[in-house]
Length: 406
Image (cartoon, rainbow, N blue to C red):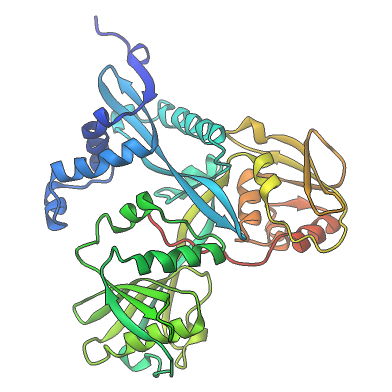
């Protein structure tokens, strides 16, 4: 008699020996066909080779039905800037289950295992690109950044601005490109630090199609870059990153210089601020959609590192938190600051102004995506007027920027 499924299932870490099965499950779940791979210049063996380093560098877990991979999840070891403080971050990817194993709790178990692994590795925050927002909300993630797509007609392109530097096209592996992004990551809240693994993911499907232009100032120092391609009379901006306003003007001069070749510019903006205000002709089309979700993995560790705006003395705060997966985040926590502004957090403490919410709401609030006043107004946060005043005062004001995909 065939052994029951529950008795056959085993959960374990994935290794590079599992690459073929890992890749096959991804392709099935996301409906990637051989013809689509070929259209991108890939074949199956090349894709498997490209994923081997990924499995070597990630923490990956899977459920196996005897020797067959049934369900999987991977965690990239990443770093993200949160208001100037670099946090270790677990980037969740490769989440997939074959349909015959669905609704058996396999993915719920894998998510819990992945979060426990992140906590052990001091990755007190996690981020992912969602394919099903309601599902990940139930697991403790929340939207923290949006993607804005804008369309500018050729007649609406900015007029040329005088700048002292120049724009040059460079190879996609140019060190100047990396230099600009490294500098940008240090000053931009929400930005992902790109090391070798992150750049591999950034170029994985587009390296042969895109062009890169870098703005150099009068001292020949790189201060901004543009990743783009032109097709069917459309100038498509994948990413535009600048450290200075002069670099922004210089790169838009470069874009506008293509006006005889194109009918419009279509780009993506991750600043959570409309592009229209920056243009002389602001009657452009802009669309907004959720881009990335995050969750606090370890509330105590997160708060100890958090760069609060502590200008004056504040009363204590008493958080009552609910987390659907991580029990370590549930319950009462007291938060206070010593005379030097150092954060002191105590599990089980009940002193201070009461703040009651779930881990999703806390994540959106402390990422700066939504303000405390708004969260209370939409009944995601229960807090006294004094607690809201304190939170508004101590949480920095800046929208998170996140332009990566993994």
